[in-house]
Image (cartoon, rainbow, N blue to C red; front, side):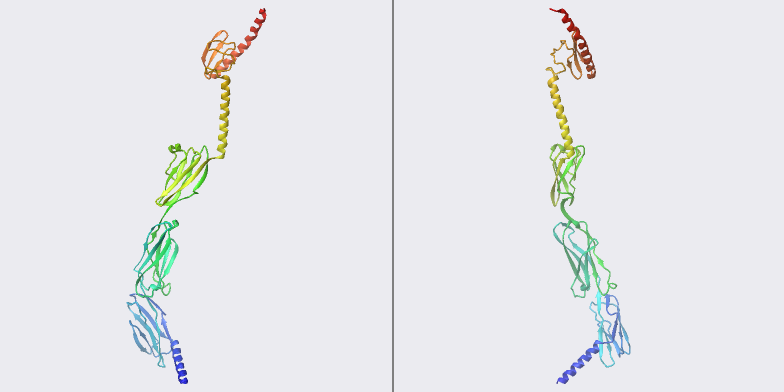
Length: 404
């Protein structure tokens, strides 16, 4: 009984060795054929055989004796599953066989995308790449493109050999950086080798529109210095989709009538900038945001301003003091401490003085009200003063001669 078991095992191993070393070579070793095209292959024996044949539902050929190779030909492949088998008859009466791998493929009828192409920043969305009428699905790969980048690749575990519809899903979170980006997808059949792969099919590209609220190009809070003699431009530029609209709130209502000010623009021009907080608001359909600009006086301008104030205060004090000494009760300037009655002469000569007129008086003449330029009046004043000085000694000498 044991002997029979050993003999049976030896026979099985011998048969397996014969089949394992079947002297068949298939050319090509595998076939990739488009549905509806012609299929051709050749089976060749690598050692002495009695005959060769092909078994197949389509194009089968019976055993041919005395040959070393046998072509296989299907003029039109109209089935999705074809398994041709080449077999040989060995001299010892045994047979061995080899199956020719055949892949029947079909390129997609269409490749198209579906989804939403206008999105809002921060929200989750999905897009679909639909591949219709492709076979076999297990050889299909879909690539997603954004601009010149591949952002997603998907393959399918689908063993069905006939045409099917496959969809690849790409999910994303909308970001403003993607606004205006072009998206498309490609369908590719990865068959035996790149040389035998059919052309890649591409969908139509779609431009993504991302809506987002305004964001300022510069910091939301700024401090700027204003030069007294220069126009100041305040910047409120913001990015947003849709484009933002602007409004300004200014601390000094009088500036609203400034012709150089555009309270609805991204930039506010101030010909006469005044210190204070200027508030700009940028708005669109997705929201609004505000920005404060603190306008302060430049350091140099404050020093100059202080000097000017000091000069004016000093002049004011001098004018006040001059008024106390030289302004008379009737509103004229007087440089004479003696009393004077209009229309009466004085011992000191002329007294009344103003910017454009003066009362000219003497001891032996009437007083005259003269309308003359100031520099001429000053010359006249000096002349009369000299005359009075020359008359004083004579008057004093006459008084000494009289005696008691």
